[in-house]
Picture: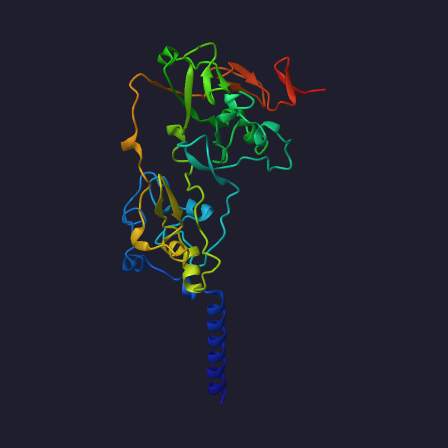
Length: 341
C-alpha cells in the first residue's frame, strides 16, 4: 500500500512539473544548431562556436561565444555560456552609433546614471556640432570597468576614475587640406553652411570626421547591431517560435534598399513573416560602388596624450590644446576646476 502511494505521489509531481514547463514554454524554446540547419537558415561559421575566434565581435560574427554574451544577451546557440532559459541583459550600456553614418556601432553609456556623482551637462545635452566642440565627439573607454562612454564627460559623471584610465578613441580626418599631411591635429570648427567640420582658417579646409576604435581597445569594446529586431510581431500566435526567438542570437539580415534589417535569429524573422530563403548572413557591402577621390588626404590622429599632465578630474583636449574641466558649469582657476559662482 505504501508503495502504491509513493508511485501516485511521483506521478502527481511529474504532472505538475509538466504543467509548469508547458506554461513557461521551457520545452518549446529548446533548440539546437541542427534545427537551424534543417530550416536552411544556417550562416556557418558565423553563427556557431565550432571554430576558434580571435575577436568575438558582432561586426564580424552573427553571435558571441565568449562569456560576455551573457551580459549582452548575444550568446550563440552552442555557446557554453548560454542559459537554457532566456535571461535579460545585465549591461547598463546601450547600442549606439558613435558619430555619423559608417561610425562604429558599440555598446556605450550616454547619460549620467551614477547618483553619487555630479551631473555633467556636456554628457547628455552637449551637441558637438552646435557647440563647435569636436572634443564631445570622441568616446572614451574606461580601463577600470571596461565600459565605453559617449564622451569624457559621460565617463566622469558615471565613474570616479583617474583620467589616465580613460582612453579616448582615435579620430580620422579626410579632406583636401595639405595640413592633413602633417602630424599635428588641426584646430577644427563646425561650418553650419556646409554641414561639415572645417580646419580653422582654411578656405579649402572641409574635413570628414570618422571615429576609430584604438587597437588597444579592440578586445574591450563590444560592437552591436543597431535597431536589432528581437521580438515577434504582435499578431504572431505560435508560442514555440516566439520562445525560440528569445532563446539565442544568430542574426540574419534582409535587404532593404542600400541597408539591412537585422533580426536576432531566424525564428525572429519567421515570426515577423519573413521568408528564410531571402535571408543574408553578412551586412550589405557598398564599398565596391564607392568612388575614391585621389585628391583626398586621410590622416589618423591618436588622441591618447601621454605627455601633457592636467590636474585631477581634468582631461587634455588635443583639439583645443588645453586642459578641460569636467563641465561647462566649472572653470579653471590656478589649474584647478572650480564651480562657476
